[in-house]
Image (cartoon, rainbow, N blue to C red; front, side):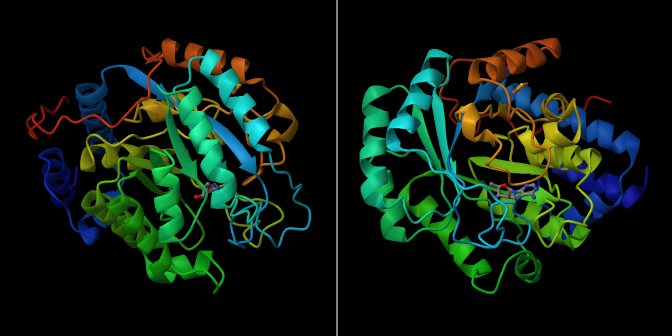
Length: 361
Ligand code: 5AD
Ligand code: FES
C-alpha cells in the first residue's frame, strides 16, 4: 500500500476530518487491500450504530412532470419522449395504505419539480398522512422550493427532506445543469432545510459526466462538514433521451468505495443502497449494504406508472408489485445476514461512543 494514502485512510478511521484534496487522493488511488480494510471498518461502524438492521423507505413517485432541464435526467422538461403522469392525493394515500400494511414506516414522496404540487395541495396530503399513520415519517423529495414553502410543509408535519446537492463543485454543477439553475441556490436550499429543522438528505451521482477525483473530494469534504442525516449516492446511468446519452455509467467499484468512505466520514448517516446501484449490477444493493449502507428504498408507486418515472435507463423493479419488491429485498438482505425492520429508521445518535474504531485487517 502506498504510504501517504494509507495515512489518510488511518486518519479517516480515527474520525479525523480530511480536506477535499485529501479525500480526492484517497478516491483517486484505488488499492484492493486498503479498500477492503476501509470496507470492513465501514461495516463495523455501521453495525455499531445500527446493528444488522436495514431500514426501508417506501418510495412513492408522485409526478414525472418537471419544469427543470437537468442534462442527466430522463424526466427533464426538454425530453419530448418522456411519459408524463401525476398521482392524485387519493392515489398517493392508497400507496401509503398499502405500504403501511407491508411494514413501511417511512413514506418518501418524490417527484419532478411539478408546479401542480403547491403547498395548498401538499399540506392537506401531509396532514392526512401524519394523522392516518402517526407512527410514520414523511419524507419529501420535491426539489428546490422557497424557504416559506419548506417551512409550511414542515409545519404540516413533514419530517425529512431529500435534496441531493449533486456536486459540491460550482463549475461541475454548471456542466450538469442549465443556466437557469444555480449551485448557490441549491446549497441555500440545503441550509434552509437544516435551519427549519428537517432531517436533511444530500447526495450525488457517482461517475456523472465531467466528474473528477477532485470533485468527489469536494463532495466528501462538504458532506463531512455538513453531516446530513441522510445521503443518497448512486451511479450515474445514461438516459437515451438526454444530452448525456453517450457518457459511460458510473461504476460499481467506485460507488462501493465512496459508500465506505462516507460511512467513515459520517458515521451515523442513513445511507441507502440505491436502486441505481441495483440497476448497474444484479447484486448492487447487497454489495452496497456490505460496503456500509443501511437503507433500501423499494418502490411503492402504482405499477401502472413505474416505467414512466425513468430518470435513467433500465431501472429495476418497474414490473413488480410493492409486496413483491418488499419480499424480494427482505430475502436479499437475509441472504447476506441483514434484516429489514419495521421502523421509522431515524438517524442514530451514537455520539457518546468513542470515535476510535478497531481496524480489522
Ligand atoms: N442516473 C442516475 N441518477 C440520476 N438522477 C437523475 N438522473 C439520473 C441518472 N441519469 C438522480 C439525481 C437526482 C435523483 C432523484 O436521481 O441525483 O437528485
Ligand atoms: Fe423490487 Fe427485487 S426489490 S423486485
